Image (cartoon, rainbow, N blue to C red; front, side, top):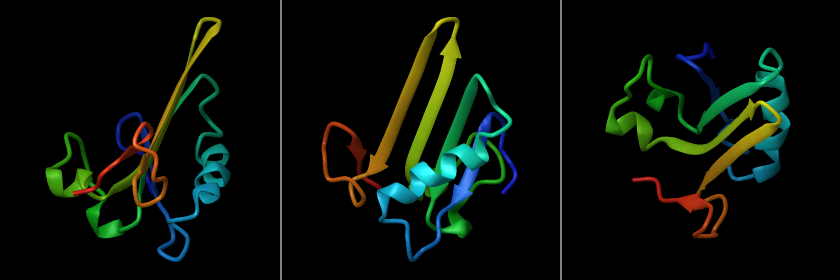
Length: 97
């Protein structure tokens, strides 16, 4: 899918969206052009992907994972989040409503 703003948009195959390893495999392919930063949002349902930002609640409720990294000088900022359906760890997961 085409990026929206600074975000790479990925729809994960419905048969594999619960497999955490799939996301790690996808990130290098969608972030290939960004050497110092990349923001990726993952959906499992293409119908919920927004066409622009800001997105509506309906769109945001379809996000199942995100990954962000950014080089800031010599420091690297990195963050990721997972639907609690994928990773049942309250410190790194969020509920999808």
